[in-house]
Image (spheres, rainbow, N blue to C red):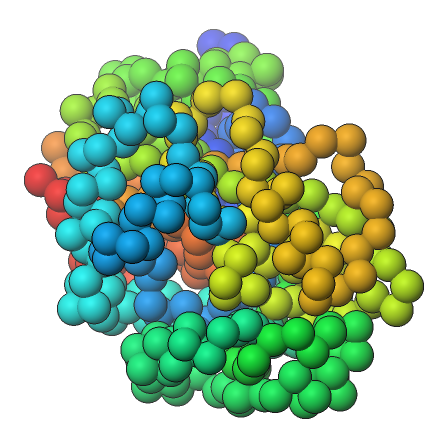
Amino acid sequence: MAASLRLESGHVRVDVVVLGAGIVGASAAAHLARRGVRTALVDRRAPGKETSFGNAGLIEPSGVVPMAFPRDLATLAKAALGLLPQSNYHLSALPALLPFLWRYRQQSTHANRLRSGVALFPLLSRAVEAHRELLTAAGAAHLLHPTGFYRLFRAPESFERYLSFELAVEAGYGSPYEILSPAEVAARDPAIRPVFHKAVWWKDAVAVRSPGEAVTAIAGLVPRHGGLLLTGDARSLRRDGTGFRVDTGAGPLEADTVVVALGPWSTDVTEQFKLKLPFAVKRGYHMHFEPGSDAKFDTPFVDMEGGYFLAPMPRGIRLTTGVEFALRDAPPTPVQIERTRPMANELVALGPPLDPEPWMGRRPCLPDSLPVIGRLTGAEGVVLAFGHQHLGLTLGPITGQLVADIVTGTAPVVDPAPYRPERFA
């Protein structure tokens, strides 16, 4: 593809404009720029300041079994009554969310989750190396910590259920793990109190100590390789002859190809291309806490009964919550922080909160728990890359590599067919 970054009649002209400077968009733009494609990365905020900023900071190669929507009536009843710490919902949002929730529930059978796992594995198996490649190039490989992570189980019943399906599937793909007793966890991480039944230590997971910093570093590769980082409104995207135009702080930007990598805001742009997706967001929250006495630990972990995650970060211990079903732009309701903080404090001594208020993020989701990656049929020059649900950080760099392959016509690093945008038609 010919380089074409130039000024024409007051307009900046590039080959590709990537909309969205989260981990997916930044990675796609970085890969394109490194291949000599004249690229602009456009977002309304600085790179890594939205969804990618506040996640649990975990690259999880073992995550081949998607999170399921509850199928048993007892769990559904508890969720409806607000008795589950890992979930919350806005009653007023349910009419709008019901089509998605219905399809999500249909996709949550063991058989469908297995099918999604088969599709996810080619991306997951390359995820760590894809991160390492970009962060090394960006001079930020120090952000990667190969600690693995724990799944902690308080109740023997939940542990046995996990062994019978999720662990059997995940281990079947070759992810190394070890089942640990509380004493064995304490030997590795003394700050984690032995108030649980068992732990599963997934050894190949890699902690990213500052996800927002990682995205910023990756985005920095774009100007280093001749591209542009621009502030702009993705909603201004419009057809302009055979290409596209988008308004930016530097003036109108013209491009032959557009990559839509806007995470939860992607459908605001794809509507103009008549693409209908069963799309929703799963909102989540985080709060940082000062470590209490002897509360420093290296290995992040998820409390399987509480559905929250604790991870050491430069700012403090980050507590990230489970799922909130609500409209994307509804006011925050961080009740899950209050529900899970006492549970977390049983496992690790948490000091006072370090944030004035909880941070809220929005996970872009589709019912089959697979992202949309690929060219949009019937919309020349449009490539989509969003919908990574709980695996956005994990899959961002490898998705970026796949997007660059698609745009440049290179043999794809993985077969993109399972992620095709039209699969819900």
